[in-house]
Image 1 (cartoon, helix red, strand yellow):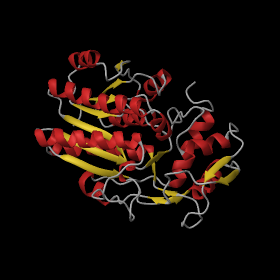
Image 2: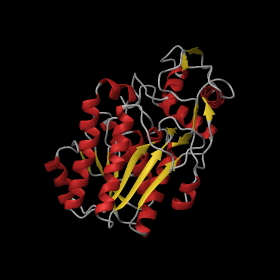
Image 3: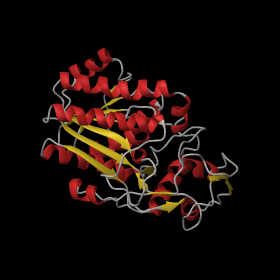
Image 4: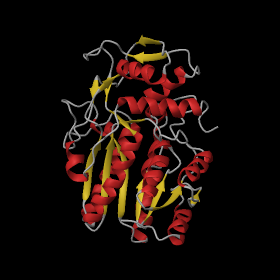
Length: 339
């Protein structure tokens, strides 16, 4: 597996940067493509600090087919891990056309160029949002699929496109990795989630309260049928998640196939569980208020990780304490993110 070259699209984003580190440590050569619409060039400098070598970087939009072909012409690429895309649920509801254009067209053009250059190993960054509101828990990969917003629908449509590609040509090696809730940061504190002023996820809100950027945390809903009334989710450390991609590449190397796998811990933690754990890890007080539920939020959502263990030989190792400690280490060292 070593010395193979992986193209990481959206490689300067939160998940992408952590994948690059793990790829390098596993012996891969890494090339990054990113249009910097949701990321920062500073992340590239931090990556170089971590891995001590230059990473080839192309500032392009993957929808630009001609420029994407230049990347493949200039490099012998063995596989692609695809993160490039828009990711805000609320923004997708307000601007669905842009989300379908960016996410779906980007994936189609990428797959088209990969086929042209006979690069047929594709790891796709999907999401647990494709399960919609599940009828039972924990969530297994064979559950019915449904979505409640254009962001989730774009993920599901891309999954279907990749399934069709595999049906048409079984020499492809495709992994659809359905993430649950990535949190945490690299233990160095050099890279992490730079969510700016409008985070999409819980943990950045908590950490922004901790550093004084926000006065208090707003918790949406305190009357769910959970152990403390707040919503329960499956939080997985970003480093564990990144290692899951290495395991997916290794599994695809063993034989051409299409893998559909959840990446989660199998444990559900409530919002209040996360607040208490963060207070313990950081030594900071997190004031909060409970407000009305958000439309579309489910009470509980957590993975059944059995298939990942069986198919990928992967299991999350880092617990809630590490998730909170590493988030705080990143946030306290970078109170304004990469800026």
